[in-house]
Image 1: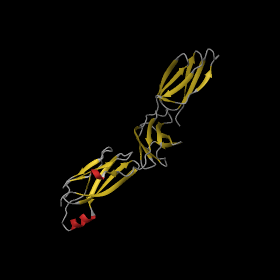
Image 2: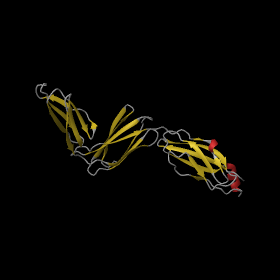
Image 3: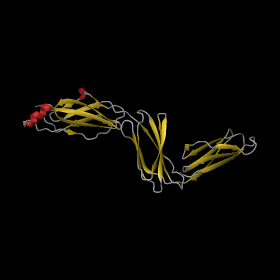
Image 4: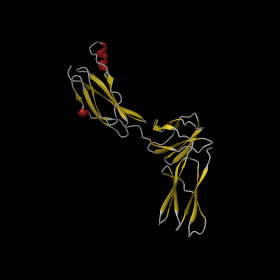
Amino acid sequence: ASPQFTLTCISTGGPATTVTWTRDSTTVTQGTQTVLNDPVTANYSHTLNVTTAGDYICTVSNIAFSKSATISLEGTSPPTAVTAVQDGPTSILVSWSPSSDATGYRIDYDGGGVGDRVELGADSTRLKLTDLTIGETYTISIVATSPNQLASSPIMKQVRLVSTPAQPMVVTDAVVATADTITISWAVPPDVTGSEVSWELTEQMRRRRRRGVCNAEGGTSGRLPADQNSYTMDKLSSGTSYDITVTVFNPAGNSSTTFTRSTDGG
C-alpha cells in the first residue's frame, strides 16, 4: 500500500470557522477539527490524512474572512495516454501507458448508484469494466501506486453508456437518380458516431451480370462523419437496380436499413 501523510491546517481568530480541503481543484473529504483553546478566540487545528499526491489547499472561512494555504505533494508518476471508451452495450474499456515507477494501479469507478475499486499490477495497461447500465454516466479514476511513495494524482474520465442506435430512416422522396448516380439522404438517429453507405446489384441484376448483360459492381462509401446524412453513389450502370444499405454506428453497436433503387435509362 502507498504511504499516508497527515496535513495540518491551523486557523486563528473567531468566530468559528469552516474548512474545505481540495486536491487539484477537487473537493476532498474534510479533515477533523480540534479546538486548541477557548472557542471564542477560535484557534483550531484541521487535519487531513492523504495517500495521493497533488496540490492540496486548505480554505478556512467564516462570516468575516476567508483564507487559504497550499501545499504540493509529489508521488508516483501518473500513467499517461489514459482513455476510457464504451466498448459494447454495457462495457467500458480503460487503457493507459504505464508509469515509469509504479508497482501497480488503482482504478475506482462509480455510476448508476454503484461503484467499485480494482487494483492491478505494474504490467497492466487496460481494464474492461462490464455489466454496466445503459444510459448511466460513469466516473472513472486511475492512479499509479508504489509502496515507497504517495499514489499519483488521479486522472479522471467520464463515459455515458449509449444504447445501440435506432435504424436510420431513408428519406425516399429525396432519392435522386441519374443514368450513372444515385443520391440518397437519411435521418440520423441520436448518439451516432458515424455511418456508411454500401450498395450491390440486386439478385436479378447479378443473374444478368452472370449472363454478361450488366457489368456494374457494388461499392461502399467508407466511414462517414456522424453529422453527414447524404451520399452520392457514382459510376453506376444506366438502368440498373441496386440494393442500398445505410448503416449507422456507435460504441454500443450498429443498425442498418436496406432499400432498392435503380439508375435512370436502360
